[in-house]
Length: 375
DNA sequence: GACTTGCCAAAGGTACCACT
DNA sequence: AGTGGTACCTTTGGCAAGTC
Image (cartoon, rainbow, N blue to C red; front, side, top):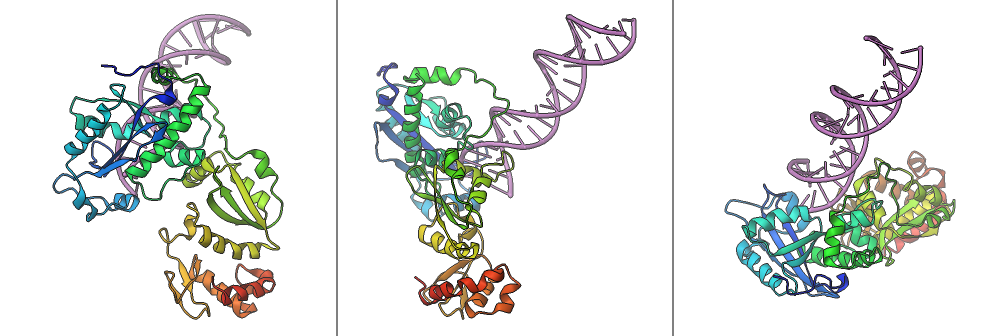
């Protein structure tokens, strides 16, 4: 049954965007959450529901950590067939049947959904990752977070279906614009385009979204830099003895680049920087900047990933968490905090053995100002 | 005929990538 | 961290053409 027209322009096609969270990949895993939204020009408010796990099944700690879904929250979970029927009801309201459906990395979601459908599957699925891989073959990463960031939308730290549905819908709309420039302008043309074999690419050199001249024009001077998305939001704050060398070093390696770095560089379109008189000054500015902006990729100084230290304004107390008594920080280790205390007290003997070196005296006045005014 | 070289395809192994 | 599918790379073997 085809109610709508398959020749309708892709940007006008009403689609269902779906995302699932699960305890693990199929067939071992169980559905934990389903989210969906109807998209045509604008995105309707996404609907998401937690799915009750089979008796005896629990949410693995790792999944609970990345999704934020707790056993307590699962009290509101619904039966999986109930959720599937609600999704099918929404699918049936679309003009085209089977319902044009957009899923990111559909390979993960489809086995769960097909099991729920038990032979009846009213969805005509395309995968945004497959489209992106063809349209942007040299983009370092095509994960949902990387793609959304590439087009200028942040994805929340916790992986939840409602947020992922909105992000997928956003990515879909951006991809449709690119598809139409390639002459892929209808739903059926999109299927044909996806089915066509891809030209083999033997040496695929990465294409960084950040223009080369932007990074090459950075000064050979110490300072702090901020990696920015296309909308200007900050991805990462770093410090450098030479802004030019540090930032350009990210873009030289083709292999062995850490996963999170690739994901960040897939999103970074611009850079802003502040030149400082010395590398030490940059090192002092960096934590302030991180604390103020909370960039998502400053993993090293986030409390979730390793123990951090905070200290009191008079440096006499320390705590692994920020508090009214210990608002200064974060410091990556007790050793760094020791150096900070020594620097503030002018203990040159302690300083010259540490990473601050002979620059220590140069920044003491600023450091004392920081200690006096912890805001 | 024996050997070398180049090409191709299949098989097997490994690295990559995306998900939770 | 664990998982699984895919892409890529290497190895292997068969074949044809060229050279000695």
